[in-house]
Each structure stands twice: as structure tokens, then as C-alpha cells.
Length: 417
Image 1 (cartoon, rainbow, N blue to C red):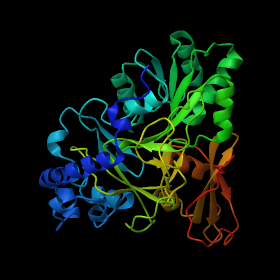
Image 2: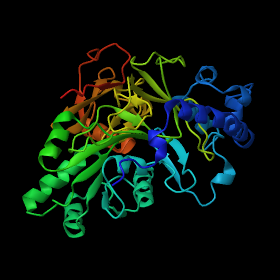
Image 3: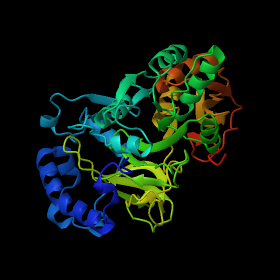
């Protein structure tokens, strides 16, 4: 059995770098010609000059809040999508909101190699528990698994009992979805005396895979690896198997992407090993994003992976450079907290606290009353769910008791346990 998806994964790093930057100038020239939003954003840039990381670092970083503003001013894509590439494609809306078109071609989000690195092979049955509603997650994983030659069951999110019933009959070889939902399925199956022992591998994303949860899965006979993916680029980096059900340290950057780590709030690359914001340049002709700031923190690790893949390794997801926070696979943005406050005149100030209860994410919206007004916590909880599409608790605090630190969203999850 081959150990790698293709020869690109084990290629010479210098040759890979040269190939990417030989390709970039012509890609930029074509994209600027076809995509007016990018042309405006890179006004004055000579594509022919962008032949190295040093030259790329001179270009501005486009961050999510800026892209949201551009899309709001010129809906739906802010001029960053090629209209000719939209025919026959899907369009998605991720929380924020941010609009994204589906890239062209087979496995357009480059997920197949992440499945392969997790031990999934052609002919396997994959139980896909990512959402196919509005956001691209379910389609990303489905396209990658099918490109690998797998059979895919589009389970989607929730409906645990029904999902367990389906998996007990279909007997999938692998699971893909958020890290914690597989535990919910396995626990429910054990309670119902349903056999899900066919699931031996999993590829998870859109949430933290805590070491304790990974260890629990391994004890139950399931090797779980994770990938770092975004709606804009698909899989940016992925883990590889050490062969015994465990994983090799770090995440391997995907092929056909240029990844930089920059100092948060700037576009300046940081030295290898220093934590900074992940900035990515891709080669998607339908949605060409150049130096796109993901808002995620990570760092470059020294050396190459023990699996033989030679691309850059990163430490994985280390938090957020901004306050936009992922909860149960969905992003929650400070603008959404502001919208909740706007809808309730009795609220003067709010702070969303994200924490961890067992292996699951939880949200608590802490609010201060406006003057002598009474806050209807139940009504605010309904608004919280309506705006974020996630449930959470509401706690009314005394006036002036919330910290004066500028935080609208406080992520208090412990990622070390």
C-alpha cells in the first residue's frame, strides 16, 4: 500500500517553493484582469514582480472583517469572484456573513489527501457529519472522499439517534465531522446496544480535538486525525498517521497553497517558531484571494514530518488573532454580539464567554442592564440562538461588573487538557 497520496507530497521543498512562485505572477495577472475587486485591492501592484516571499510580503493582507465590508458594499462577493466561473457551481454563506463560491474541478478544496493521510482509502464508506446547509463544510469533505474513491453517506449534523441507526446498518469505515459529535454517536450507540465498531478512522475539523478526547477515541479503537480547513481555501493543513493509530506531530501544509505566519494586525512575516496569524494565498480562479488573513494563530515547526511529507509543518490551531471565535464548528463574530445588544434596549453591554464542559463547547452571554431596566434573560437567549444559530446561557450581571478590556468574545477553553 502506497504511503503517500502523490509525488508532490515528498518533493524537494526548494522545488516546491520555486514552482509556486513561478506560477503566482501569471495567476495574479489573470485574476486581476477578470476579478474587479482584486484589481482594486491590488491597485498599482505589478503581478510580474511577485516572484518570491519577500515580494509577496509587500502586498496588503486582506482580513475577514475587510472582506465582509467589501461584500456588504458590493454583494454578494465584493467583486472578488469571477462571474464566468460561477456557472454550475454552488454558492455558500458562512457566519459573519461571508459569501464564497465553490471552486471548480474535482476535489476543489483539496481534501482527498487529508483523508488519505488519515488512513482512508478507495472503497471505504465515509459517514459525513458536516453540515450541507448554507456553509460548505459538508460538500468539502464529500468532494474529497468521493475523489479518493469512497462511498459517502451525507449524515449532516444532529439527529444522533437516526445517525446511529444509519451507521449500524451501513457500517462505515470512517467518520468525518466535528471532533465531539463522533463521541455523541458512539456513546448513544453503546446505550442503544448498536454496533458501530466498523468505524476505525476519522478525519475531524471545525473544532478543537482535545488530547483527552483523542486518547478516548484511540482506546475505543478509532484513530482520529484532524485537518485545519477554512471555507475560503478548503484544507490548509492536515495531520498524518504514525501507523499505530497515533499522529505525527504538527500539521502538514497542503499543496498548491502559499502559507505565511505574520504578526497579528500587520502583514509582516514572523520568524519560524513564533506564533502569529495564518495568512494564505491560493490559486482558485473562481475566488482568487491573495494574502488572506484567516484570523487564526499558528507557528511554523522545524523540520519535516516523520511520515516523509516534505511541506512545511505548522503547530495547528493555536487560537484567534481577533475575537472571532469558532464554537461547535461555527464562527461567532463580535458583530453578532453587537446585533444582540441592538435588539434589546435593556442591555447596555454584553460579553460572550466560550468555555468547555466535558468534551463540548458552551456559550454564556453575560449582559449588563441599561440603567434600571430589567433584562429578560429568556428573550435574550432566544435572540442569541437566532443570531448565532447556536444555543447558550444568558447571565445578567450587575451594572459596571464586566471587565473593561475591550473583549466582546472571551475564549476561556483550555486547549492543553
